[in-house]
Structure formats: structure tokens, C-alpha cells
Length: 302
Image (cartoon, rainbow, N blue to C red; front, side, top):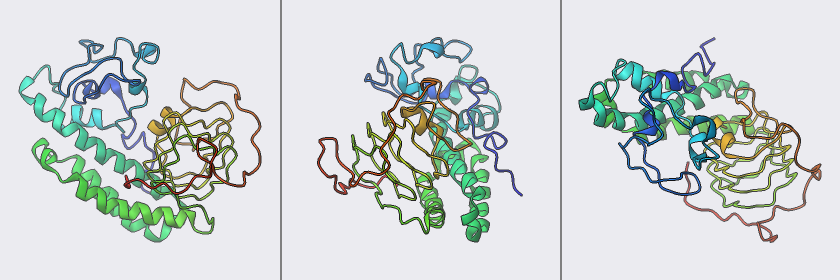
């Protein structure tokens, strides 16, 4: 059986082996997520000389919650230690521009590796397992290309090919559940407390600030779903597919929230059950003003 453990495959961020690339290469704007503006290529003023964050233990309190929900899927250490062979942008300033350009490409490839690795563990996906393995091998091969090749890689085209396989995987997993198709739906602030969303297609759905307390999200496809500020207290996400640590970190939950085994409970979640006992099943989904929510589709993100 091919390796499918994210840590074994280097898909979990190891900040100690990275040159602080997410703190340098990526831009951010002053907002609720970041306390200050920063241009791409400029080191964050909180980045120390040893590439560690000087306020790592107080990011939320100091106005940088956006940093706590970012996940490079291990791309940082791959670029730092493999692509650029352990030479940092400080040691070799001439490589900095290229390193910053390669990092977001590598992150997308590693995100695909995360999804493909998960797909290979799913029993319903057995009919397409050979195709999934081939896609994983090809994606892994791309991550080991030289910097010049990665910089010019048409990563969007590769994502499109892999996404077709991931969609087929999702359909196989959700078959027989008759879950709702809410792909790309506008469910911002939606009242979904206790909702039966088993097997639902929530790919790219906008669930920002949604009330999902006690909701049943088993076997739901959550790839690309925006869960920022969504309340998952007491929700059951076991068996959900293509959920990432970054999505979980961006949401709110509690001790009763059930997560897939590959994901960790965020440190900022309370250690007790905070939500009321959910009603068994609401009759209709509602929007944040209490009115029945339609499909409200926006341009699809996936």
C-alpha cells in the first residue's frame, strides 16, 4: 500500500525547516486578519533573524489571526530545503525573487498532494485508485522540478486535471447519501444548526459565519468551502472529504466538534462544549435574516 500519511509525505508544515517564506513572499493588507499592510517580498516586521515569528504565541491577541489559519501544506520546507538546497534568501539574495515566485506554485502542488493522498485512503474511490495514484506521482514529480521550471509551470492547468479526479472521488464517496448540491452556494451567515448535510456537495460554498452547531457533515465534500467564523460547535465532520487544517483553524468549534482523524483540534477552540444541544433536524435551511435561503450561487471557486 503506498504511503498515505501526510507527515510521512511532507505535507505538514515544518516551520523550523523553512526560511519564513509565508512571512516574506506573500502580501497581506491591514484588516481583521492582519494588523498592518505588507507587500509581497517584504519580510513581516515580526520575522526574526532566525526566520521565526517573534509573536507566534500571541498572534491572535496582537491582531494577526490570519497567520494562524494559513497552511502551506509543507511547501515552505520543500522550497527551502529541496528546491533551493538549504540556501536562504538572506544568504543568497540573488535567489530571493525566484524563491518567492516558486513558493505559491509549490503550495498549490502540495495542496493537491494532500487531496490526492486523502482520496487514496477512501474505500469508495477504489475504482479510480490507479488514476489517483498516477496523478499523485505526477504531482510529486512536479514538486521536484528545478526552480526555473516551477516558476513557469501552468499550475492552473494541472489543478484542472486533478480536480476532475477529485470530483469523481467525491461523487463515489457521496453516492447513496442523497446529499444536497450546494456547490458554490452563498450560505454566509446561514442558520444551519442541526442540519442534516450528510453527503452534501459544499465545494467552494461560502459558509462564512454560518451557524453549523450540531450539524451532521459526515461524507460532505468541503473542498474549497470558506468556513471563516463558521460555528462548528458540536458538529460532526467525521468522514467529510477534502477538509483541510486551514479550514478548521478558520472556523469556531468546541470539545464536542468531531473532526477527521488527520486533522488537529485548534488550540484556540474551547476545551468544553459551548453550544446548546442541537435540534435533530430543521425543516428548511435559512439565511442570516431568517428567510429561506435559495441557492444564491456565485462564480464557482472549484
